[in-house]
Length: 156
Image (cartoon, rainbow, N blue to C red; front, top):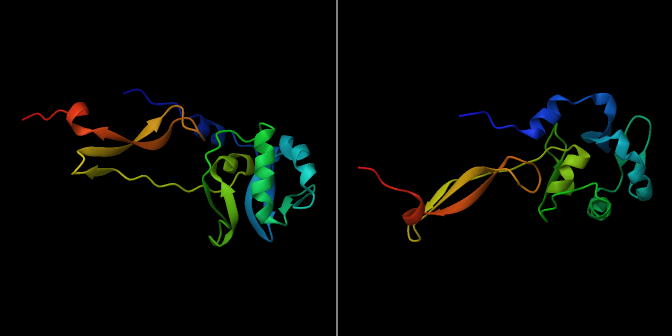
């Protein structure tokens, strides 16, 4: 079976720290932003400051508003209407909430879980599988139900 290309892994291996600026909430470094995206953040001076050494998010509650504007400008793609905790990676202390699709822009820690399961009464099997066109990243895992009677065969 040939290896599947994972564009997100290739991009991560190509990471050059000088092309990104740390994002801080208080003293916690929660992510990083591409230097090329810094001009887009100038419109949000009421919620964050951009300095030579870091982007400081002083009002994490403003992320929803900021992310909606970045989405309209095409800087955040694959919107899922799925928020999760923005945490301090060192302590996992919750600092705010973040739209999943925005995690790539902000360079933040992401979370996910998938479960394989069988529903006996409905004869369905739910299996995590790689999807080439997933909303946030290509070739990420998602789950889809498989009707057992039509998709699987039983060999004796």
